[in-house]
Image 1: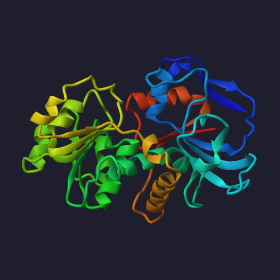
Image 2 (image 1 turned 180 degrees about the vertical axis):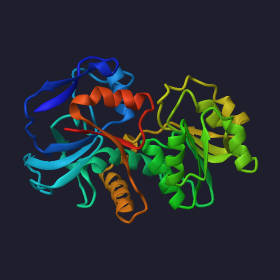
Image 3 (image 1 turned 60 degrees about the horizontal axis):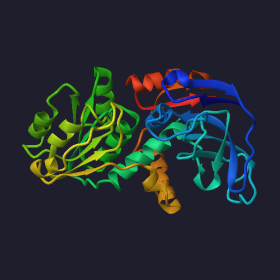
Length: 321
């Protein structure tokens, strides 16, 4: 088979297309013919070495495709099943080994590019709304990168629950996408975010600010948060947030700051399937309209990473073997 290897830590240029042996499933695993692999910021953090990784390795932690072989003791899946997965390494390839416990059957009306590139984002949006914080109908939240893969899903899901969403974007095109997803107010990163948010909330600020951008936005996120509100720092697209004095949270209004990661919210198999079922159910009942903004051939993984890191993407991004 063909696969992408991270040959060494570094920029997108370290992503190489190679020939590799076909994998063989071990006990508790299934072998899947990959039809779409999701491209996510965590892939870039691992590639750079910002998160621990050991090159050479096959990147990618989510995808979708058909089961083509079963490992010993796998009884709840069959050859030919359409499945998707996340939090399982090695998806940038024509074939991938997936733990059977992490392989989710994909509804027939969900296309592979959506199933393969949106599950991680959908689960992230779910735990952001039901885990790291718990905004309710009538509350106001801020969603940074409102036209990104997580941002669009988070905005649409929150708006469907009666939550007012203020989003931030970088271009007119992305502003329109964010509005279509349900954002009540769309701001630019160069706006005075804190004052604009307080103007839109009668001086109170937002109950929750969801910040996946990091270094460039964290200070304004803190300043835009209401008394006893929460800043959820769930990513660092612009770089990690430098260490800061916790005493700032007192002066800002007894704020909470959390730095969650998806793995801790799907480690329990029952919780994983509950969150996944709610995500696919929201697609099926029309609550969510998940879009794949762009696809790339597997061989163009380098270009996919460059587009993601330059904020040149909207919605989900998929590699198609």
